Amino acid sequence: MATEEFSGEFPDSLAEALAGVQRTIRRRLRRTAPAAPLLGAQGELLRLVVDRPGIRVSDAAEELWLAGNSVSTLVNQLVLAGCLRRADDPADRRSTLLLPTPAGEARLLRWRSRRAALVRDHVARLTDEEREALAAALPALRSLARHLHEETPPP
Image (cartoon, rainbow, N blue to C red; front, side, top):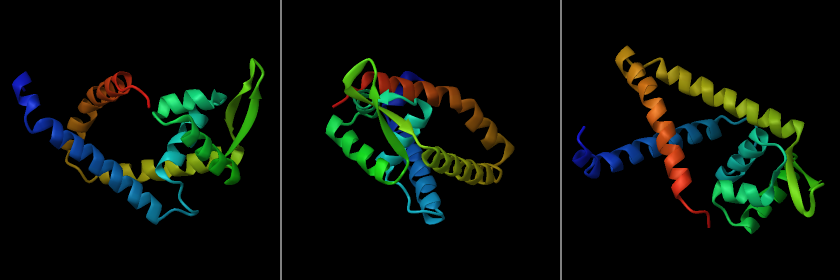
């Protein structure tokens, strides 16, 4: 595709397709969730803390592009749900470190397993050519996500 073609319908079509896939996955998983589902931002914060245990609240806010007080509210909700715990930062007593609980890790693992099974089942329904096209697009999609993340200033 020529560069001029990327300024037309393509960006909107790509954004719509990605959003549609994510929205459908989220809705399908919520419908069959064994427990009350986490809200989108709660799930994002839990994923971040499981992937980066000991992250500071301020760093989580920056990573998720949320205001610090919004992350603090999410932390309170996830602590009450038994998914996260707070710890004092030994390097700076004014900072709080976030750590997943075993229940939070297990909940995220179950969600990731259910998501993988859902996507695997539906990818299996695609043609070989469609699966190959999706696999070939993964590096470009990861690069796009990285560029979007790097160029968007947090609130």
